[in-house]
Every structure is written in structure tokens, then in C-alpha cells.
Amino acid sequence: MKHFLTRCSIVFALMLTLALPVQAAQSYSHLYIAISDALMNTKQDKEAEAKQALEQFAIDWAKVSSEQKEAKAKVDEILAQATEATSKDERLEALSALSNALRALEKLENPVDEAAQRAEFGQKFKPIMADFEKALASGDIQAIDEAYKDFNSKWNKNERPVREQSIAMYGQIETQMAFLRISISAEEPDVALMQSQFAALKQTIEDFVAGKETAEVVEGEYSLATLIAYIDEANDFVNAGDYQAASNKIREFITIWPSVEIEISTRNGSLYTKIESDMPIIASDLLKSNVDQQAITKQLNTFRTEIELIQGDSDYTIWDAALILLREGLEALLIILALVSFLNKSGQNKMRKWIYVGAFVGVLLSAVAAILMSTILNSATIDTNRELMEGYVGLIAAAMMIGVGIWLHSKSSVVSWNRYISKQMGNAISSGSIFAMAMISFLSVFREGAETLVFYAGIAPKMETSQFILGIVVALLILAVLAVVLFKASGKIPIHKFFAVATILIYVLAFKIIGVSLHTLQLTDNLSTTIVDGLPVISLIGFYPTVETIIGQSILLVLVATTMLYKKKQA
Image (cartoon, rainbow, N blue to C red; front, side, top):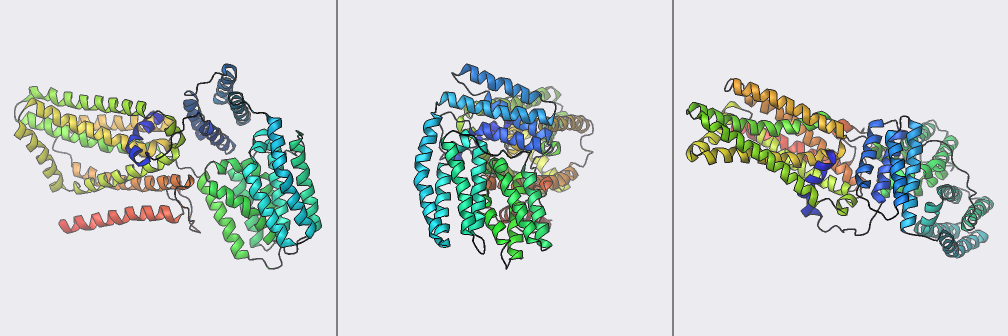
């Protein structure tokens, strides 16, 4: 249901994304992201989120077709094992196997000569390593620093075959380079130490080129929470003035970094680059005679907050889902009630069935429209740009919800509500036909159905399927009870008071959607991220400590305050 509605709602953001490129070739990148999500959440003991990531993988995997039947069947088998896993260790093992099986399938579909790849990599890096050795031999620290930057830049451009063929060798090279960077940035650089470190790095690269697996595997289960814990411990040492211990802790961070980096690189590329380049320098700066404690603490806290933003749970609850359907369903229900009441008062009870027919057709066509949109938008473009679209669609939904909130606000007095009902009844009276009655009923339901799809588009991608469905069920049950009560006690219930409460809830939900949507755009590098120090992440209400999200939510608060002041003057 969740993914069905997600795809349905994308149509409202499609015009904003027509310029986005369509990938014709089959890509598995989104599948690796789902595996990464499942791994991260399993490591953090977030079972529901891990299962949700596996559900997303299964949905995307079902669309894959391949001539490599045996390899594809292997992925199917391991996916079933991961889905049915009953323990943390069992699921982690299955997810690792799933990643390997998917990679094996890719290799079969796109045959690669790994030995040739290694040889080509070695040919490219031979002159690069020679240049760095020449700089080391000169003993000129500035020349060594420039040569390292060139070495690092070319490594980043050519590292792919190492990463794809051996995660262990890749991790060891990354760690050795980081430690070399620390030595170069030292207050009194030790050239002999650098030469020793580079010799070990050069040997690892040559071993890879020769097809030897000599890397020391970093044992243990690591996650984003582990990175945050290391930063917290380093900060504690910095605050206590034990800079050596703090530097050692950063070195530990660097050692486990290759095991966790994919969880950051797939969500925030710029953060990945900053951490990889700046952490070695921080470790080195901590060992200098004059340590800028304030600057280092600020930088570590910024990294901590940005990692926490990625780790933060931005899911919505069943009440978020229920509130939307309650609001939209109640408006349609009240209009239908007004029309039925008019027929009762005018002695035309036989025409009531046409009101119900119109409402039923409205529900039916809303469902048909949803299915059509889902079919049209079931494409690779949606998969490739899912998170980007989720952010924009969420903002569209929030904008519409602000309009809904203002509408509700305008109906939260007895006079305003009675005026609205009288207008609806007056339109029906002037028409005086069965068709008009049915059409008003149909349009009210169909309009609310369309609005509901857009609003759900803003929250469905960030919800567990079970929570989403449960929210809808709860809303339907409440609406059923309200329908019975309203039809039996028509005219006696102060509906305007409900609108006053609903207004507040709608604004709160819009506040959350704005925060989560802007946060999603930040994670995809489509919006800058400016951290505000000292503020917490409060995912329950969608509050993230960045200038950009705070500005977006502040605009909402200003609009709410302006609406309240305007209404007060009109009263």
C-alpha cells in the first residue's frame, strides 16, 4: 500500500522533474541502497526499519528481469533467507550474502576481466606512486603535501576496481592513506615515518595488482551509531585536555571508517568527502603544541550532528496517516450530510440514494485514477530519483496542507460554518435535479480523494507499511462512527469546534512534513546543509538543527500567525 500510494502521488511532482534524465540501462544502485539500509538498521537493532528496507528491496527486485536465471534464482533464495531471518546475526549474514549474490549477478550480466582491471589499475598508479616517492626523497614537506593531494585525487578517481574486487584491500589502502595524511599534517613531520607508511601502502597496492589478498580484516559490527560514539569519546578527551587520547580515538574512527562509509556515501556524498579528508587532519592537529580546542570541538560536533541527521528516524506514525484521511473524509461527509438533510427537510427522501451513488462513484474514480498514475509512473526514472521526488512531493503536500489549515481556520466559528453549509445547500436547491445532487456528492468525494493522495505522498515514503495501513483503518473506523453519530444527531453537534482542533493538528503535521522533506533534499545534496550548533534532532515533529529546515518551518509559523491575526481582525 505504501509504495503503491508513493508511486501514485509522484504525478503531482512530475512536472517539476521532467528535466531529470531517464536511465535506459538496468541499474542495481537502488538495490544496494536498500541492502545498506537493512544492514544499518539491523546493526542498530531497528527491526521494523530493517524489514521495511527489505520490503523495498523485494518490490524493486520483482521488476528485475535477467537472462542469468541461476544467478537471479540465487538472489531470490538469499532474499527469502534475509526476510525470514529470526535473529540479528542471521539477518546480517543473509544481507551480506545478498549483496555478494547481487554483485555476482552484475558480473555475469556485464563480464569483467578482473586480472585485466588490476593490471590497468597498476599501470595507472605506477607513475603516481613514483611521483610521490620522488617527493618523499626530496624531504620538502610542501612538495610531499602537494604530491599526496595529487595521489589522493587520482586514487578517488580510480579506486573503483579495488572497492569492487576486495573490500578488505580497499579498506586497508584507505586507512594507510589516512595515517599517511596525519603524518604529513603533523607539527614536526617525520619524513622517515612517512617513508615507512608509504612503503606499506605501496605494498598493499602491489599485492592487489598481483591478485593477492593480504589485507588485515577489521573485525566487528560497526554502524553510524559507532561513529557517533567515537566522536563523543574523542570530544570527552578534548574537553579533558587529553589531546593524545583524543587523537588516538580519531585514529580508531579512521580504522573502522571503511566498514561504515557506504552508509554515508549513499546518503550524503559531500559529508562523506569532508569526513574522509578532514578526520586525518583533526587527528594530526590534536598533537600540535598549540591545539585550537574550540575549532576542533566545533568541527567534531558538526560531523556528529550531520551523521545523526542521516541516522535520525524520520518516520511518521499511524496518527499522521489517520489525521489526513479524517480531515478529508469528514469534509466530504459533512457536505453529503448537508445534502441529505436538505432532501429530508424538503420531503424528497427518495432522492437520497443518488447522493450515495455520487459518493460511491467519487471513491471508485479516485481508486481508478490512482491505479492509472501508478501504471504510468512505474518506471526506472522513479526508482532512480525516488528520494529527490519524495522531498519535492513532500513540500507540495505541505503547501496544500497549509491551504487546508487556513480553510479549516476560516470554518472554526459557528457563523463561518453555517455560512459554508448554507452555500452548499443553496447550490443544490437552485439546481433542483437528481443529477445536480449526485454531481455535488461525487465532486466532493472525488476532490477529497485527490487531495488525500497528494497528502499521503508527503508521508507514505517515510512510513512502515503496517503503520500506514493501520492509520487508514483507524481513520475509517472513526469516520464510520462519526457518520452514524452525525446522521442521527444532525444539527446538534458543534462541528466548528472539531475544525478548530483539526486546524492545529494539520499545522503540526505540515510542520513535520516540511522538516522531513527539506531534510530529504539535504541528504541527496539538492539542498545545502548548514548545522546550527547546540540544537537537538527531534524527529517526532520533524525538527532538524539546520538553517535550511528551520527557515522553511519558520515560514509556516509566520503564515499561521498571520492567518490568526487576520481572522481576529475580521471577527
